[in-house]
Image (tube, rainbow, N blue to C red; front, side, top):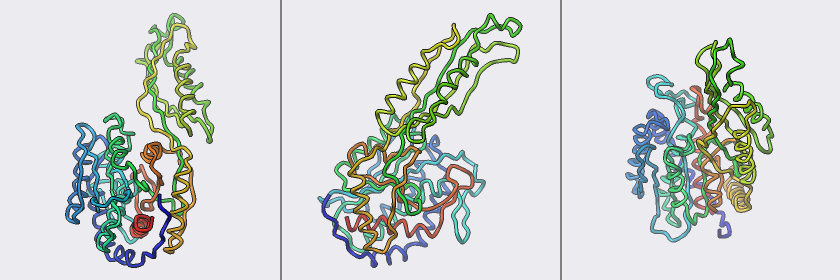
Length: 388
């Protein structure tokens, strides 16, 4: 990365302010399109909204098509520049089932926009496109700026076997910076976070009538022993495990033959991930109750965002830019949740996560985005792209 040439961005910020109301409208339009991860039609419709806007601005569009997941999209301005690009990114999909927010799903008051994905992560996408629009109108042509629209972030891209993540890595190859537009702190960003392994366990015992329960092998009892072992993982700075779902048995007076449960295991490093896999294999293969068996299946995974000097170096440069442009500097926050930013960091691109809009109550029907944060987020992104 070249030495930072900090330049005051007041004129660009004035353009952002002049466009703010227009992009508040785009924010509302995006959130009105319900797009849970498993609803490809809605995810693609939301993507088309941004594609239409980007085409009107003269930006180039590339679409990565998927059959089950939504399509991932890359929007590029200044594609003919030879300098390394700056990449913005956000995800189109949400966790909310259709109808969760009522009809219409979006509302606004003087302070907030309410709706599915308002802050996670449609606000960040809108802020990124606003930054690109302002830079384009200002006449910035020095380097390419890309906006990646991820389509299946919320489920860890499990249904496309990580192809959308691979697409993001390909489009970000050689980038000067990857700036993920998940919700902003405020005043802190994420450059380290845990990875996630999600397992499904299927325990088999032997059915019997409750009156002769000693002749059976309880799958539920065996599952309970395994869960007890997994739940010992509670290290905030290392491995954690939460067994959040369980199902088993057919009747109160029957010894259960089948029981299934899930485990969400989180870790800071790849080495810890391998340790978690070893522990899962050991617990699954151990019959605490003689006659029981167990199969553990990896459902999905997310790589950790390990400590990388390139990310800290990027953060130092970003704070220099923010100081010169009268933007509050940011500190680091360790994230326990998963993110595609971890994959980009692992891929070798200098990465900062959490540069989107501000808001509250993500992953709930009370989700909201702070309207006044849209321009602030766009100014942060635009200043980095312009000055780096």
